[in-house]
Image (tube, rainbow, N blue to C red):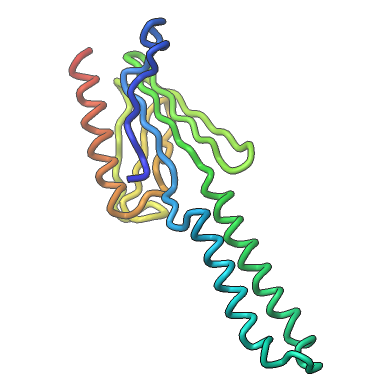
Amino acid sequence: MPYEWVEPQAQDAVDGDAPIAELHLWPYRSLPRRGFVWIMAMGFGFALVPMLALLGSSLLWGLLPFALGALGLLWFFIEKSYRDGEILEELRIWKDHMILSRHGPGKAFNEWQANPYWVTVELHKTSGPVPDYVTLKGGGREVEIGAFLSEEERPVLHEELSRRLMQLKSHQ
């Protein structure tokens, strides 16, 4: 799953400022960098095959810009996908407050804070922008969490978050 519950850092535990729970979420990478190299090499190879038949012909110069343009667009859109996938959501929960921070592509940064005792985790089956949309509601706002997760992973995330918050509320 493209998220994990992280153990508090040893230094934070010594200082007494360690969160009780910490969750990191990120988009799934279906194409690693090594796969990107293979896709580009295959694209070049497939573009090269018809070019070999046209070697020495003036038709080569008519077809070459389109082949190079297709390879350039493939490169551009895969790189854009990698940049857009640089999202990291961090949910840190203490006894008296919780912080959800989202580090987006580039320097985009958003943060939300609330008291975990009053926060509810909601699963919107059909009313969200994606099926099984998970939100945290509290502090006068409702924020999304894990919208980039798959349809199967969002209900699991909802269940885990609900269980963690219920455990925290029962210990207070």
